[in-house]
Image: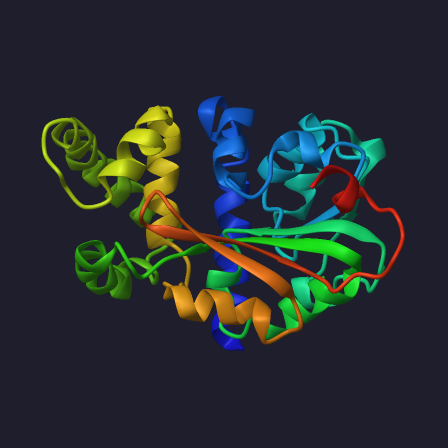
Length: 276
């Protein structure tokens, strides 16, 4: 529990210091890539959705640009005010300064999204259960997670490094990121000519970030107190053990998992069956 409180504090400080989502980092092009192959932004139009762990509002604004009818944005950290400030269409958003396990049991949401969140929660089961309760029958839970498969060499380097960096104060960690950014920039160039680890992600996603957002991506890997890299089986069981059916898993860019599962549905028309 202490590590969870610290992780929330870490991300609160992170989003207070890096509050914007400029360029490709906050683009609909990236949003489409995140959703692939299970959803398209068009399927979210007019739907009632929630996002768990909204941070500075990047995904919330992607959902709004996609035409979501209403978004419930859940953010427990001190970045909550940044989230509220950054929202493009506040009249379409309900902001809740709570942890994901306290998402209200609406029973009427078409989608719940947890993008880059559950792998930072030591016990994500209560959050998955809350998402299940918030969805209407036939509603769908979309998750993106760090993956273990495809990251063996990367994790061999990252894990020893994180034992140090997760304890560093912000200004020291930010300085360290500035130093290692240049080897990272060189790595991008090498990926164009060599089959290096996480090459697909590097060229498809990381290279398209601005230099500032590349540094944020590095900081994001080194900062949180807790991070779990899931096997495919562990990722799938997150949803299947909590009642979701028709769970599908995709190995995104060979380094992470996207999943989608459905709350068992009843008869009647609904947004997902109409568009999904």
